[in-house]
Image (spheres, rainbow, N blue to C red):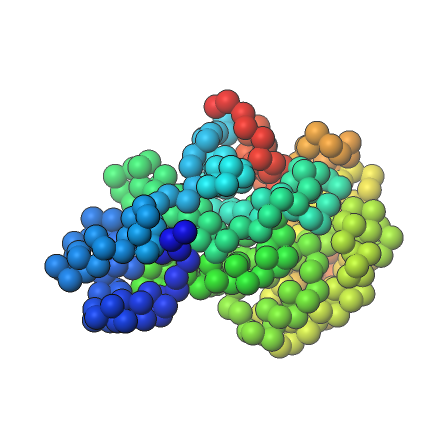
Length: 350
Ligand code: SF4
């Protein structure tokens, strides 16, 4: 089976070309054609290499790794959710969110998820498999091509969040390999500071990010400020308890000097009281932290309700009094089930 050329970082592609008698600059041209401008012209040696090695049944393939099954737009037209089919028939979802002058893509890192967070549609479907690095890269290429088709003026993909289906740190090697390609300035060139890896608390992955000094943002989903409260919502916290998770975050902060984003899904009557906000503030004391407060998005398998605006603002006020900055996130794409925790590879007609 030929390898996908999208799985090769720049240096590996360059080695392959040089081993075949080409010059290092040919890698730059091929990389540009793959990631920036499909109309890039090749000089004859590269044309010959492409004809010999790239294509169905050859040494490498650049066949599309994802096939669009559905393309849903939210009623305000600011959010698009793509249901994408993979080569083995698995389905994943990728979301594109528009903001004034910029776009953010939310990509999946696994088909399904093993973490089982009770309010999450992906968690409710269970784990299927890890995505390969090239399947993560292909989602970014897909949204870029959707942006190119949308307008003659090239629209800017500014931010990338790994918050789609799956737990990125459960698929660490493929995620980091994909990001190395996505952030490479010679290709897609998304700045690492505009890429966020989200985790529900996979402690060894957080420590590895710190040890390797990976340059990406880290977002940690907490949802509960006591062991008991968190374990009721996030079953994986029985494996990596809250105290261990916060200790890993402190190590990460000290080693990298980076701010950590903490995600908190606000569920009415469950984790949205002023007392719980005070507990959260205590937990994060001394950390360079920013809390994103996300009113619960509805999913079929969980009966909880979203916190109302007044209670969310009260929660935020308690954090503010303790010096913890926070943002109440706008609800996005709820009518097409593209909000946080709503992704599930069910095919719907557009
Ligand atoms: S919230 Fe994230 S980690 Fe939890 S089940 Fe859903 S996809 Fe997995």
